[in-house]
Each structure stands twice: as structure tokens, then as C-alpha cells.
Length: 250
Image (cartoon, rainbow, N blue to C red; front, side, top):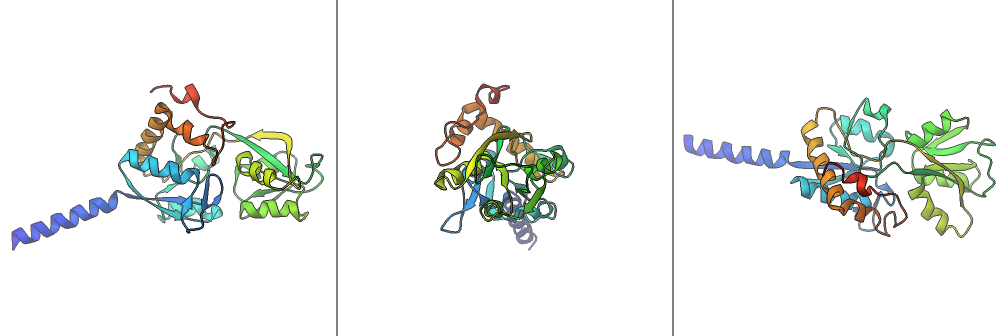
């Protein structure tokens, strides 16, 4: 009987250890090319491919969870998932409540999308997604900000005249401008905000953060991260990559 109980306990312990190695990746699922939900109802995009590769390199079994942007940090803290990988820029303010991995996307440009090139950014509100670095930037730089829950709503606000422009990642807005047939244009002015894009963790999960940091670094060192970034279905060959900077310390 004791041997049976011991065997049962060992099986239960093994199952618990296996479960502990399953990491839930939280993303928005509404911000292409970073992340979106495809026609099959699955998370797709750059961060899906990246996250799967990082989990493989870290020896982790991972699952994907979607969550609305404005509650993505609170739901990490409450345990609904273990990691945020959702196009989140690294900022000191966010760093007070979460810990970031090293960045996997270098600091990139934010752009303004408007109905015409001569749009006056101070003549009316500029749209931005709630709780983003762009919303904070607009508010802090002499413009009036109007915030929306989703990136699609910010673009719609420009189309229907609720805002004179939208400020968001250029990588998100450029395909929208290209596909609009000239109805929407990018302004010549760009902003560089934040410290790059990284994964966010609960401050208690230092071991997990270390595993993903090592995996990100290995992708920088062998060039696979840059190769993934410039894929045409993601950010394209003209986007900024890590290059030799990413290989420092390899």
C-alpha cells in the first residue's frame, strides 16, 4: 500500500511539474502585424511566430490567451496569464508595475495618419489607443488627445471626422494608408517614443523572465530575430533591425 501511495504521489508530482512548465502568453489579438486573430480563430502575426520560437528555445510548453488592451496588465497581475507579448513598448511608468524582458523590437517610429498631408495637429483632437505611449505623448506635447479602446476605433475616428489624425506605431498605420487608395495618408512628421518592444512579466517571475531573456538573446545572436522582423508579411526589409548591436555580448 505504501509503495502504491508513493507511486501515486510521484505521478501527481510529475503532473504538477509538467503543468508548471506550461506558460500562458497573453496578447491583444487586434494589432497587426504584431498580433491578430486569423480566420481560424487563432492568434497569428509576428508575435505568434516569435513567441512560439522563444518557447521552443526556452524548453517551455506555451498556450495563447487574448485580452483587451486596456486591462492587459491588470489581468497579468491577477494571474490570467503569465507573460504579455502584445506590441508593448518598454517605459519607466510600466516598469513600476511589471518587469520587462530585453526588447525584441528596437525603438521604432510612431506616425500620424490623417485625411490630408496638411492636417493641423493642433486644430482638433488627435486619436490614440487608451493606455499607450502615443496617448501619453499627445497629451504631453500641446495637442488634445481623444482615446479609444481599440486601434481600429482610432482610425475610424479620423475617417468620420472625430479626430484630425491618429498617432500609432508606423508599422501598424502604413499598411492602412497603403490600402486606402489615397483616402488616408501618413504625415511627414514622425515620433520615436519608448525603449523598444518587450515581453512583460509579474515582478515575482524572475526565473521565467530569465528564460525568455536568454531565448531572445540567442535569436539576436544567430540572426533569426532580424530575419523574422523583415519578413514581408510582418515589417518588411526597410524596418529597423538589431544588426551588430544585437550581437554584442554573444
